[in-house]
Length: 310
Image (cartoon, rainbow, N blue to C red; front, side):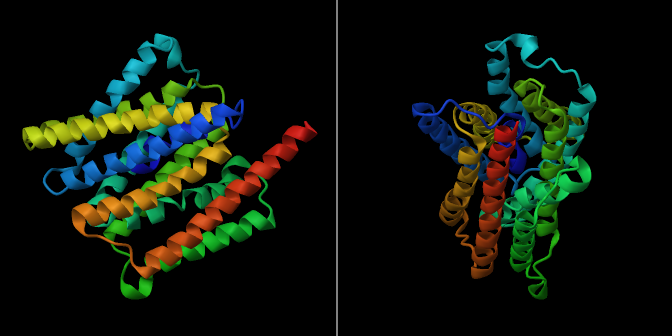
């Protein structure tokens, strides 16, 4: 869930921006996006101690649809979600279901910073998958960054210490699901309305997990229902804020702000659960972040070269 809510907009939008003060505003939107997303993740983790995961996902997606629906109503109505490729959104909806369950299950078992460190490997996997699935050419520099990031993941998983448990497997599944979703958007989504991506993610989650909740429902307390509403609304806002961020600043400027979640996640994890990342998470996560930033840098440089050549 967390790995995809705010990043689908980034994957779908062009990297251009007008520049100047707009970039500063875009950076502000990006910082707020990931702060809201981290608060949503904390709410989901807190609720996971007392409710079935499908019920948590259902309420989160349901409340996230609130701000998204308001956005659609004020930005063209049905034209804001009209699609020429319904199968694309069906496929992404199915991937989102798998990724959401894996993501929240991972948060229910692991400290937030551990999950984020694994999620941050998504750019590395996307780069590797872009060769067989998109036919893109990846040079030795980016392959070197992919290898370095892979080593970072291995360091974090530290198999010798039996760290490869169901929590880390769930986080890896969620990260892989998001990566496949981005690949689909890169391949087919350039001419799709941006709002359609948010709807095609949230609506299947609400429908599928709502069906499961109908057969296995734990009545929430008013406090927990309020927390679900806050978390879901923050998730919907994060998705919309990312749209605004990438409209005002290049994706290359916006994307690194996702790593601020390690700071917020560490702080919230310590305050609420007394969790702190160990040295292996810090070392491996640092290597993953560095490789992801380098991949982003290389893609930006190559993109500029292609535009100049064209």
